[in-house]
Length: 260
Image 1 (tube, rainbow, N blue to C red):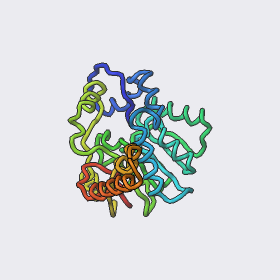
Image 2: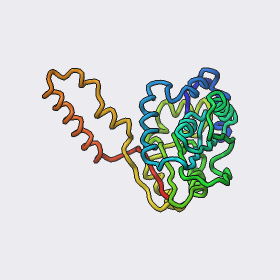
Image 3: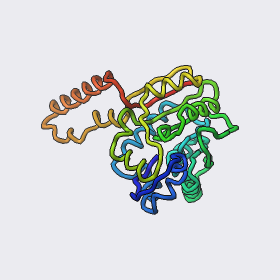
Image 4: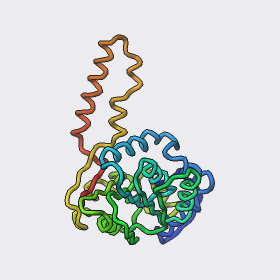
């Protein structure tokens, strides 16, 4: 989960080392941005909508959540505040130090953070849910990451994946991050995730629409411009029609759920 970095040049032939050093290299401003999530920038609605979508897809606590690629831990801490037992894992020691400091400062129980590589880490505690939030596309070998998730999940558990779709690696920001920090930035569409998931043992999968897109279609500031109650109803009907049409569109990216 990336903050907006300060840009400077570096080169490395080891993208995994780039991932380890990322939070150490982005500077104080970049780290402040990363720790302000979900209230960071124009992505606030996206973060909160996705968190709500996960909560409504989960059974209520008690349950254990493991977040792979947790970064500064903001999402793990939100799960913990909701009552779940949470383990956050990240390859960057600096990110985990920031996450642990946030946990202590806010007095949040039920959360623990570990430095580790989610492609190979051993977690003895079984998990009901594993979360990859903008994290799987940073893996060196995503099959190993999903195999680790499958291994620690209880039977009937689920892995949640929020990843960029086709074309992500060619975006200007992704190219900048690869150039300046030597990290992995991959395309990670649902079809690719599904094919790997089947190989490592997941039984079922689904992809649901991105919740922030539905919020934008239904909850609109344009309602304030309605000239009458009839006009208001017409605007609501138009929004609902757009949602139905949107649901049946192909999904190059979405909320991917993998079931063990």
